[in-house]
Length: 270
View 1: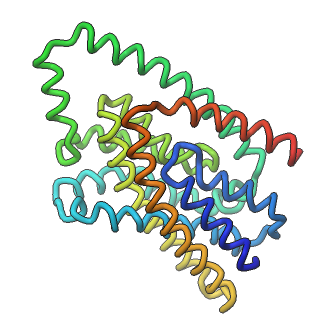
View 2: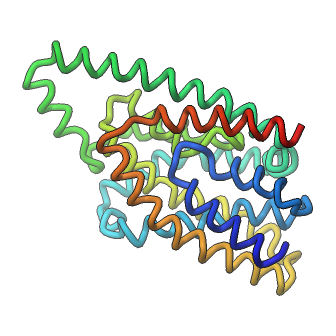
View 3: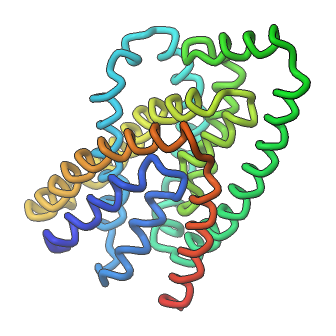
């Protein structure tokens, strides 16, 4: 892999990691467009580079990681992904991380699912506003603080996140939709999704580094470091964009984008 390719993938990762459009899927598709040779290093790169983007969360939300109540909920939410990811590690890396067809189907179907969910969610919220009591609304507002998310909801969000072992699904989309289905406010679940990404990607990257670091050359380590740093910087900006975006918009535009992206890449690749 050349330096310029590492830079491009770092930018792509930083932009897409926290958006509901699948960063892993984008890395796989862009690698195909750039004609990067499929290899064990590329698969490791696509996993480890995500940690660079994830570390931007610590820079922005470090205070939340000092809150023991938030940490306990993150641990509970991480359990399903940790178990499933460890059990299926070989299958994921061998059969899924270089499978463009899987990515495109996941992006395409996920786009329709995201649009359908948002339309349903709008009707549900409108019904709650029209018929809900002031007491119920106040209760929802109070219960939505990160430290007050129930352990049951945390576990549910963790199971939703585990769907993202399929490249193209999107970890952020799975967790955010799962949280909204559980009754959390959009801002609350988006922030929880940010935080949950930290233990998830630390574990995934740590496992991959442990299993493969001996096979990396010095040049590959430098290539990985460059992509890592670039993804961190770009993701820092991307997080702020998403938080600003959700104040006034839903995720339907991202659903449309996923469908169009899958269609265009299907024509290009196949």
